[in-house]
Amino acid sequence: MDAHAHEHPNSSPPVAGLLAQFASPEALRAAAAAVRAAGWTRWDVHSPFPIHGIDRAMGLRPSPLPWLVLGAAVVGVVLALAMQLWMNGIDYPLIISGKPLLSLPTSVPIMFELGVLLAAIAAFVGAIALGGLPLYGHPVFFSSRFSRASTDGFFIFLAADDQRFEPISAQALLRSAGAVSVETLQVDEASGRVPGGLYWILATAVVLALLPPVLVTWYRTGPKSNPRIHLIQDMDFQEKYRPQSASPLFADGRATRPTVPETIPQGRLQADEHLYTGKVAEQWVTTFPMQPTAAMMERGRERYGIFCTTCHGLVGEGGVSGITSARAVKRREPNWVLPLSLHTQSVREQPVGQLFHTITHGVRTMPALGAQIPAEDRWAIVLYVRALQRSQNATLDDVPEPIRSQLRPVSP
Image (cartoon, rainbow, N blue to C red):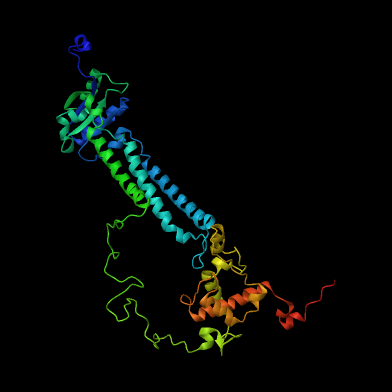
């Protein structure tokens, strides 16, 4: 037998506090004001529904939780904007469809989402932390009277760890405040322990959270004989023919059917040789198939910014002036050929029909863009390329005669 049991055979658990019950919400509010006036700091009220004015009677200050949520939202907005500025404008500046590297309207959705996410996390964590949770037990839960706190009971609990706590004077205070009953509560040593089942729940959650990365790592360590795991089948395993696969359905044994000879898709006749090939009688043309206009030049500038600047740069310098070319050089792509400058003599001397052909069918590592850009837009790009070449290689002959006649020769 324990030696301490002989020394204190009738020892009882320490007092946790006093629980007082009141008859009505008004009595509870008046009692809360009296307890506050007495200088108590470790106490609380319990009611089945909110009581108007109870926070003022208790002297409660406004919760800092709204400021925490606002601060987290502002941090999320600023973080999202800085993240997009770094990713899109500094670390990997990529021009997409001629859009600016950083545009506030396009950044707003991410700023909004990250602001809401951090605000929600702050509200959840802040409410738990400010409420003193997790709290696995409380002395009031061992009172049979307190079960009415969720129906028609109104209670005040004075904690024994308050510096003003003294059982007799505390009971007198509660009685004088209108309490219909006052109950002394003892500390239950088991009430503060973490439930044993919680450890199993946390352990199970950790194991389940580790399963996906473990499975992904296992699958990526080497080739597997079985197909990859598909929780959602989508259309990956539908019965279909793969490109260049065989089929017994047709006489030639091919699943991919060739186009029908001498057929032209509707609206794709392309009878204008000058417009669609850049040639006339197998010779490169030197004129445009349509009259160049300011609108055509602007269209060419726009299309050039979308399809050409990533390799040739904004002014056609070639080399590594474009982001795609610079990245290919940085990655040391073995088959990459640096784009030529559009201002070299050989390119400037090419007829416009040859430039049109290059855009249409590609050259070296430049892809063919004929399937992506309509013929009219390709001619607009050629017009803009000519303007770029002229802007970087202008001579006195390019100045109109009325203006040229007014220029004075510069003395040597």
